[in-house]
Length: 114
Length: 113
Image (cartoon, rainbow over all chains, first blue to last red):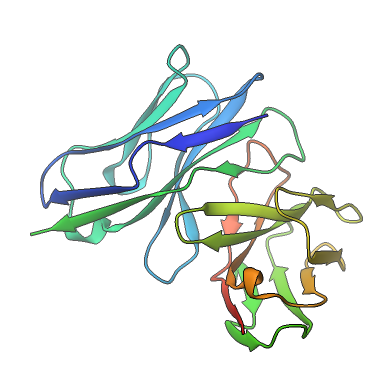
């Protein structure tokens, strides 16, 4: 069975600082990996996803993530955060077949202050 | 396009009452999903429908039923609500599944007293 662990439940940072949100997964089969963002009182929207190919994936709003198969990790990074990046971030995994659903981590709350 | 719409946005029920949460998508997606979100628990899958005419249980199906009414609509029913079902419920859809992006609705905030 698949599982996702987000290693930090809360990450406070100052504006313009770099940030890394950590995600590890476990699965016995090939997987697809996703990061979703949830702004306050909204639904989730996709930041980026890894399907295959280059292990460095670029997403919206300046975020990027790196797939590391040997360490079963998919950490999310941004070199310089803004106040508007304050949100909850979810890492998710799905298996390499049609008709399967996402398994989400418990989320990381990113709080950016000035 | 409206994307994924959910009704109602808010609902308060008494223990034992029933209700149906409605979800519709206008993206011609094959797969639809119901999740619940609780503080510190992330999103947990309740039921999903990989294609019209099929439904499957997710991680937390107990106390819920679903109906894939047609390709556009996927409803979630609570037959006898319990306080443990107080949560925010999200519907999502995707082209097929697995590798496809899921698009989420705005959520329904349900309180069971």
